[in-house]
Amino acid sequence: MKVLLINGSPRKEGNTYTALKEAAEQLSKKGIDSEIYWIGTKPVRGCIACGACKKNGNGRCAFDDDICNEVIDKLEASDGLIVGAPVYYGVPAGQVISLIQRMFHAGANVHYKPAAAVTVCRRGGSTAAFQTLQMPFQMMNMPIVTSQYWNIVFGSTEGQAKDDVEGLQTMRTLADNMAWMLKNLASGAEEKPDREPWTPTNFIR
Image (cartoon, rainbow, N blue to C red):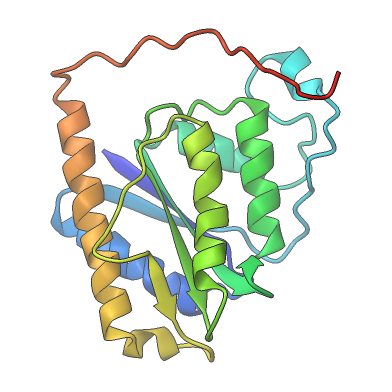
């Protein structure tokens, strides 16, 4: 089993990486492989609602000039997902939101894959950003992996997250819970529930 951890910070080995690395190391102790994928500093397109991904039907975004389709491939080859992002002005870094929206809208095969969000901030906005990151998971039928607290780590300058003792413990507990959920799902004791056809209801006629 494998978990994909997305590092949504423009700093490759900053505080977001520190938080995710703590989780990855704990996953390894539980026998779960992982990969920390850094989204880099190049532009990530936002979804333009063109609908081309629905027409091509292959679960990929029509725009193939950034990391989106590469990450979709990695996610489909993984059993679980953890998305980490720094908090900018009270919300997750914009490139992370753009990536998630396009991946999920394109039809990436993510249903019933356990998922978790991690936010890293200097002081405030962590819970609002955390909630924002988690909302797409709930819409995609992805079981939410919890911890002993909200998955938040504090740090401003690079490396400060290492001093957030409780935050790093929260990351380890998150990893333990992810490993537990993956192993239970892998037992195959219960079939996945049948899904009713989507019945969208628009309130503006």
